[in-house]
Image 1 (cartoon, one colour):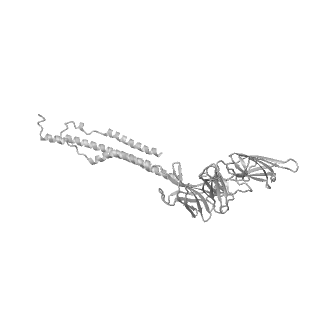
Image 2 (image 1 turned 90 degrees about the vertical axis):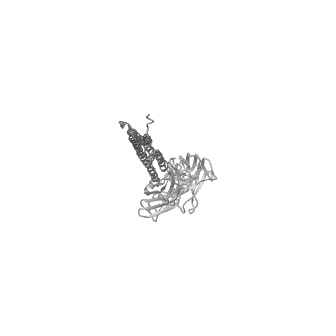
Image 3 (image 1 turned 180 degrees about the horizontal axis):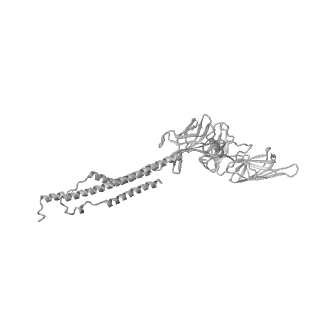
Length: 494
């Protein structure tokens, strides 16, 4: 029988046929683990680049505000420091250095710490007047948790001419005159405007043919306010007589944001009918305004700020037609009269004539209730208000934002590079794996043929299969996967 006729040679042949083909375990292991682990590692690296390295981070920068930066030897600026993330800003309390350099090489510097609201008053003193732009730099004076010492919060060359400041400053009106009759009447708030519920003065003037009228009998009627007489609130009507200058100063307490005044004047004549005049006027009231008055002597003056509603702080800046002379903030506390009040010391020997205090509940002085109160309150003539805005001298936030965006862009481009290189490496490993498999199969078939396990004429049917189409499809799928990963990176970039 055929089975019984097998000899030792046949057994040896069967043994040799059953032997596995030799393999390159090292290279095949690398390819196998690379194909399995590379995609996972790529996704982790890209995620780290996008969500850790390239994630938006808060950045710290500074702004400088003030008046003109020429024609003076001293400049008083307001420094604002904040940490920004997206559209949200929070103040930072930091120790800072501000350095200024003129075009002719003269320098001035300031060092200090911002308050809890992130503000500080910066005084830069040169040895003489400067002309032209100033190079300003704001840096950290000592390292912080995330920032080194000397880190630049703002830098730039600033041009702030006096002409621009003067053009932006507007002095309010004082007298208003729209009367009827032989006697001409005009009125003016003692300090430009009124603020509810703070008492203030009102001037009434009587003239005839350009000359002051003394002894005119005045009937004064209010709506939306009450008269203050002898320190006590009276009614809405009162009587007064013009002095030798033809004027009357009366005190009133506004209790509404709409105050109308009617003045009727009468002057008896030795002969004939009495001369009369009439004026009806709506007095200017600023809704939500804080009140500010100077108290004390020249060597120890202070500005008393009052608010009718609860506020933690008020902000002050001292101005005139020439520039800015200082500023700060003051905490407000509940007072006995129900208002919230705080006291802010003026600079020593500060001249108050023809100067104003811009007072606001907002540190940028953009609130609707911001008023430039005159620092002098004269019994002789009304004082106007001043409308002005601090000049925005230097802003470090655009540069800080650009640095942060550059960091994010670099992280995303690195993520794209990782995705592309990982995809390329994946393709190489896939091709190599396919080539190794094809080579092993071909070697195995040759060994089988050498052992006589392949019939004559069957060589063509036992050749190693072609992987061209399958390999191309696999490469396309891998490429698409990594391209989609790259698209995710680009999507995050927006």
